[in-house]
Amino acid sequence: MFKLAVYLRKYAKETILGPFFKFLEAVLELLLPTLMAFIINNGVNKRDSDYVFKMGLLMGVISIFGFLSAYICQYFAARASQGFGTDLRNGLYQHILGFSFAQIDQFGTATLTNRLTNDVNQLQVWVAMMIRLLVRAPLICVGAVIMAMFLDLRLSLILIATIPIFVGLIYVITTKTAPLYRQYQQRLDRIGRVLRENISGVRVIRAFAKTDDAKERFAAANDELMQTGLAIARVSSVFNPLTSLVVYLAIIVILWQGGQHINEGGLLQGEIVAFISYVNQILYALLVISNLIILLNKSIASAERINEVLSVVPAGSQAATDQFPVPASTAPIITFDGVSFGYNETGKRVLQGIAVEIQRGETIGIIGSTGSGKSTFVSLIPRFYKATTGTISVNGLDVNRQDVHALRRRIGFVPQQALLFSGTVAENIRWGNQHATDADIQAAAETAQAAEFIDQMPERYQTFVQRGGANLSGGQKQRLTLARALVGKPDILILDDATSALDFATDARLRRALKRWDQRLTLLIVSQRVGVIRNTDRIFVFNDGELVSVGTHDALLQTSPIYQQICASQLSEEEMRQ
Image (cartoon, rainbow, N blue to C red; front, side, top):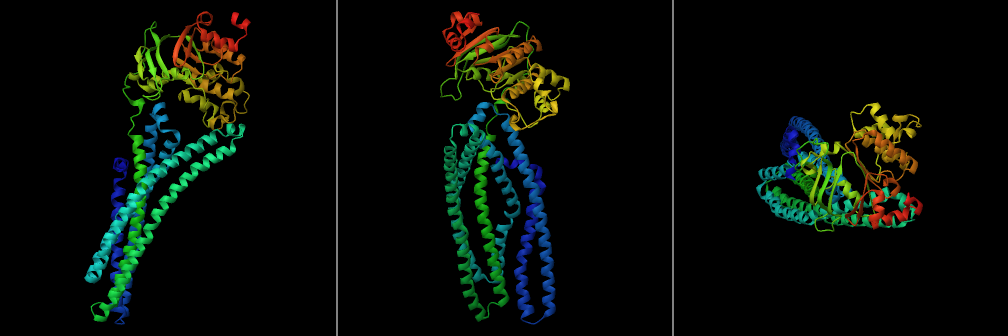
């Protein structure tokens, strides 16, 4: 948890002044029972109304100053905790944005979301409580015992005797609840993952009539969370009653012994009243300490989870200092040299021994069976994943040596899943280039074959797109994501099965428009359809993670059995002879 204290540096004033004013409030509060004893002994018993009035006025003034001190502390605690939470959330989010796809997959979207929200909120609450109560509660306990010792040393020994009992209770509660809170956060991650999958996949669930299965899956995750929560509640619920029981037993003993001291003339009525007030202050402070300990256990579990994310060095920031190089016109723009890749070091390699060169301005078709490694191949070029072995070079320089932002600005990537953000059509396209003019946006939309449906929208480029593009068809979303990639004017454009929702006529117009867009554009098209890639300059055929064949459509029909099988499943004999 101390590693995260760096986010409190900006709020050093608040974290110092807040506890100071809480300390002042506690000192003022400790004076009140003693003043009450003076009023009873010197005012009420002696029937001195002036003394009672003066001391009562003094107690009122002390109470007002105590209120003001508490208010100022609350203000500083709110500023520090809210600022700490905001800065930590921003820092954590920026750190996660630097993760590679593999690092994001390592954690999972659900747990990263929970760590950004629930865990940060938990630490934010702890900071507020720490400033407000961490000084006050122990001070009240210690101060009340000291004040009680001044009133009657023998009775104060009863309070001192209860201290080992409280220490033992705190130790037991801490050791029991700490692992339970970590487990609770893990199960909260699981319920978030199940909920996200069920909601995002609700159409599939309903299409296959799996609503009951989805309910059962969520109920099982929810029940696990409930059971862990109940286990925490069972342990935590014992602490407050046991604390109260010990204190009330101490009060009974104090009253019994105090009564004897009063009869003996060694203790006045006001002093026993003040003594009981100090015992009640100790009881309240102990209950606060118990809640702080429970909160601390939660916060430690949250801090460990956040530090686990922050300890991962983002792959995008590793050894990436060189800018996107300018190559010789004859040099390959992309080179794979003995590249192999696996999503984990011990698992099966998704790609094995890839060695190939792609020239500037080439159009490459990439085809193969499902799971053959096509998408992984193109994902390695912009360094979404890092090759396990071998070297990938863009413009003659290893991608691991290039600045990742400069590299990706020169590569337009259109993924399989067309993802749009809430905002206007123009804003979505401008994601590819924040400085794009309206003319640039329109030109990119026309090339992507999106202008034809955008012009039919009521507000054209200012039409609002719902989150995820829910108010657009699949083909419209794909064309907008392609326009988003084109507006950045990339040197390399990768279409990862990005035209699957387009009809053949629109797809043909799109490929012709891309050729006119930029003759130097290097285009990589991943597709399952032979008709999409048959006219490309070269075709890469993948099978089980290996690049088994490279050539033109006509050449592969003569030399590649796998390509022949793919064509036979999609084309008629007449089409294959053309």
